[in-house]
Structure formats: C-alpha cells, structure tokens
Image (cartoon, rainbow, N blue to C red):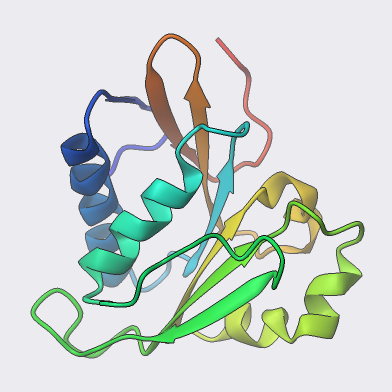
Amino acid sequence: MLKFDHNYSINRLADTKAIAKELVQHILGNKNQGHTIGLIGDLGAGKTTFVKSIAKCLGIKNNITSPTFVIMKVYDTPKNNINPTKINQFVHIDAYRLSTNNYLNSLGANEYIKDQNTLTIIEWADKVADNLPKNTIFAHMSSNNERTIIFSLDHKISKT
C-alpha cells in the first residue's frame, strides 16, 4: 500500500519498478485520488526512469523518452490485467522549459489533467504546481547518497 510522507529508498531498477507499480495500483484503486502525478527533483534524480516504469505498468510498449523539447507526449493505454478499464491515455509532460503556468493551457494539457480516464505525469512539476489540481500526488525525488522518493499531496516538502 502506498504510504504518503514515507521515504522510499531506491537502490536498483527493480525498486523503481516496484514503487511505480504500487503507485499505479493506488491510483486505479482510489476514485477520489487525482490522476495527476507531479515529479520534483534535480537532474539525474530518476524522474524519467520512474515515468518509464509507470508506463510499463500500464502496458505501454512505446519507448518512453523525456519530452524536454516537445513538452508533452500522449500515449494510448491498452486494456490489461492491471488497467482493465480506468486509464485510456497516459500523458507525459516535461515542465523544465516552461516559463509560466499558462503554457500548460496553450498546450491543451489542462484537458488531459481534468480527464479522470487519463493519467498525467509532469516532470519538474514544481514549476507549474500552482496550476495543478489539489489532489495531485507529488513524488519528491532525490539522488544524494542514495535515490529516494517521498510521496506527498503538497509540492512543498521539508528536506530532512
């Protein structure tokens, strides 16, 4: 079960995959929880690797790369055992180069964010956090001595 404000340690790719699966199961099993995930962390913290793991959990076969220059990529999700009916699309946004929250609107991203049948993941979410739904799940990622993820419903988290 996904724990909020818990420090998950990631030492191997298998750890990332396990945590991604836990998050996907949490989202699919909780109707009141948002379908927007905001990733916050420095370069090299593992944001894109985490996105790849989530996409794989949803059964997406595409090669997932960071949309740094195109800003947003949209993938259709197949129906499978983990995702029988709930999530129809997976949207991957990289907000690193965004200068304002309004740019999300001009991309049409807010339509995806509002859609309960779409899972939207935003790298560098702290840059657009004020424009995201209140029930966004934030994953605070760090890669100091070891990689860690802390899930929170707040984009501002105290660094311990």
